[in-house]
Image 1: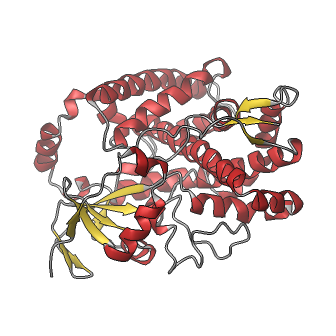
Image 2: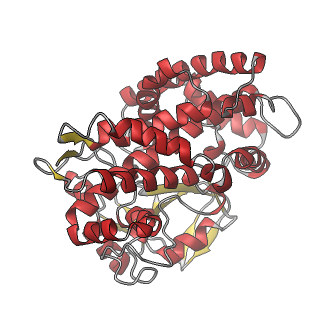
Length: 409
């Protein structure tokens, strides 16, 4: 048994952010398990390894469920949880960051309300929102796809589904972007303070909506969650707020980034775009392939819960591992001709939404939004093309997406 090889790996390098896939190919071949020289994170690059480890009970999103209360208190003091009180109260304890019995309980509540069957029932509502966004743009002959379609669609849909007041929905995207920024390795103290402010503002606003729904329930997600508050094996008030925050983050980050990455991929592969126009029934498999080809989520971390060995590499309790989803999704061993875009690819066991017990709860809605967004664009804008220079990418590595995507027709 040995330690993983240490290599130069700089995911914050602008050249890597622009195109990580040539680097990924080299890593899969030469260093399938490695550590960066300036990091204690053990990275995994290959699809088979990541799939096995996603289901390994020796790894977890947090170690908190394994600690005695006094140990947990010491850990949180050392991590300065009191420095970001709102962020610690809601973001650091939401479903994504729990394990064990708490995770099972929270996920059980949420999957009854957010699942493929319920997502299919939202199809008409999503299509109506897509059409409302498209209608004023068609006569202009140009748009920024990110700002005018990809960003507002999931935010408006989440607002509608949550039961969020329409006059406040413009605040959801800035809040979400600020809240997820600290997940990036290169985040700053200023990013943390913005995340803290956004978390507190969202929590205050959602508290008011929860109280209104408890007094006057509606046909929305907040009403459904609020009706379960305080019952055995359901949600506390803090968990209810954290769950609404998770729905906001998970429900639109994948759609915004997946839509931008996916459409840019089609624009760069005009023969595949022409095929999709001619065969719209391919849209479902096409969305899966676009998510695989340029994944919106590139990295997911887990803690080692007990000393373990994998593929000859030793990992100690408390260390962290990093699953390079974007790298695994280009693995030839799992996806023949992985660097080629094949909109009819089946099977397609990509990791764009993760896997195992932390599989993205927002995946069914994200898939539906992406399908209707792409299908509608190809139907209503026959001659769309990229306008201007190479579109700028968002800074950061964990969430891969575009800042803007100018189009013309």
